[in-house]
Amino acid sequence: MTSGLFRSAAHAALALGLAGAAPATAQAVTFPSYTVYNLGTLGGTQSSGNAIDPAGQVLGNSNPAGDQTTLATIWTNGRQISLGTLGGPNSVIEWPQHGDAVFAGFSETGQPDPLNEAWSCSAFFPSVTHQICRAFRYADGAMTALPTLGGVNGYGSGVNQAGDIVGWAETAKHDTTCQPPQVLQFEAFLYGADGKPHVLAPLPGDPDSAATAINSQGAVVGISGTCDNAVGAYSARHAVVWRGGVAAEILTFGGQGWNTPTDINDANQITGFADLPGDVVNGQLEFNPVAFISYGGGAARQIAPLADDTNSIGYAINASGVVVGQSFGGAEGTRAFIWQAGASADLNTLVAGQSSLYLLYAEGIDNAGAITGQACVLSQGACTGTNVAFLAVPGYSRASGVAPAVKVPSALYQQGWARLGFRPGVTPLFSHRR
Image 1 (cartoon, rainbow, N blue to C red):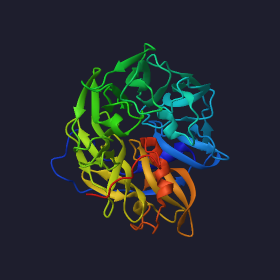
Image 2 (cartoon, rainbow, N blue to C red):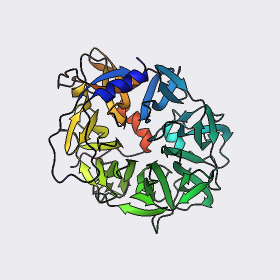
Image 3 (cartoon, one colour):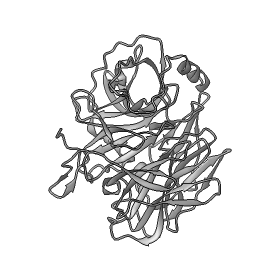
């Protein structure tokens, strides 16, 4: 099956109306059923679909044999293609890719970090190598390193149709709010047509910022906070949206950290996740998020976890205001969800026919409704430890409405939390308080 056929099937699905503002009341929603495809790996046991571009191509990362490294990958026209690196062992495309000619991500360079930092990139790789990591621009078959803001490391996240890239990069300033081994301050940047990075300053009083996604109007979402460990936690004290380079806070739920917008569409609808109140216990910040939607940067509204779960994360939103993400903390461990206009569903209940995959989280959705993310490969009703990128294409086949009875081991789905800055054995587990 080619991605061209995937797109044809997706466009044949029932169209959903554009929601440019908050709905006055919850609407009756009928979700489509989905045919799910295993996109495979580069020979290892792990891959992840992290975004879908406007041309229907899936982008993410995939492990070669041995699982010692991971590589930025594109799945297109029935092929899986590694995009290579900037000279080091690892690279990833992680955040929303709203353009189909220019992609953004991050890669190690093969050179040691002179300050021996772990930096943001390391949370997304199989191991911490203490190599320099840089944001990259990928276009016309070539990966190019983007400049930092005077420091050592950078990180590329989102891109829009014009090819504007956002992310974050280190400055030369030694930041006293950093937790070792992080040393340098970092700030969000916008890399535009002039070929230079432009700083997106944090909120007043915060020393650090990071940008995650950008829409076609140039509105950017991200975080503002302290340096901490350069990803997640107190780095995300505040969720923000930048317009014209000026940051405005998106009011969340009262948590002290992990307040992170992940995507913004052209109607300025924003999704992400934010900690609930009471997330600091005995002086320790807990990971206790709930997904949200914000209309135009207004106060965040909760997207509740699926029934019997305690937590949720919104990863992506399309032009119709459909959000996909991850619901967890219940008996199943974790499951991909879809949300629209106040209604949610376990994506596993919408799969047509028999599937050898259990959908762990959904991280990308295009405007035709096709969804990508990561799934575990099942054997005799249990996850095998092989997690693969998937593509779920909406269609007309009937789904059973019942998810397979799977209990996902916590160690398995915690691997995926690395992309949030969650470090197993270091970051306290989410709380089960609701």
